[in-house]
Length: 224
Image (tube, rainbow, N blue to C red; front, side, top):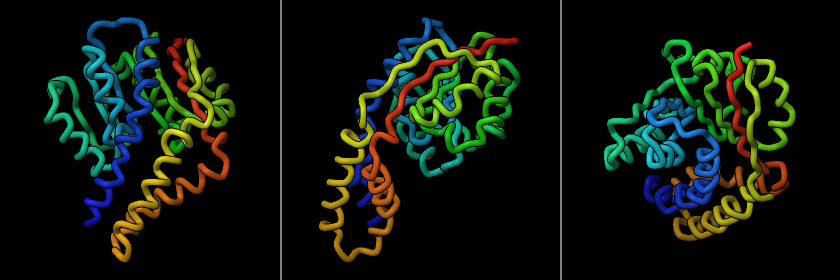
């Protein structure tokens, strides 16, 4: 029953609306032919699959959530990209790749939950000279941490903001309606507890949607 509830919730349908911005961020990068990408905190990764479809990139996706990786592996098995992507269950701090290995590092909404100083050191080590680091984070978080990127050898080359309150209008507000319907449909089911985390997220964002306004920030590694 719990799997049925989560299937009805269908978060990926809501998250799909953000892929237009993933595409826009990707198109800012110069054309590179074949290149390597590390997708940090890839999850069940719609962005990963989008980038594969837009390019000849070879992608390594890392995450510590095995359930999400299992879902991603199913997508890969059903796709034409299985020879260009590898999924690893590990954290950014435990990756085992040589220095200057990746052309692009990509993360969407992951960096803010990590130790930023430690993460930027690892990212600089993994990224090739003049490589690119693409990051989606809230405007508020980014503005409070901008100087830390430059101190670790990353130069901002481009940025763009998502529409105001987009997380609320296009994700959490529809999610709120969907949750209300599911609570009615599965009334009395003990498996409704699976939805509690999403209820809490909706309440948090609804309280102040502007706090979650975000943007894409594209950096280039500049060796000092």
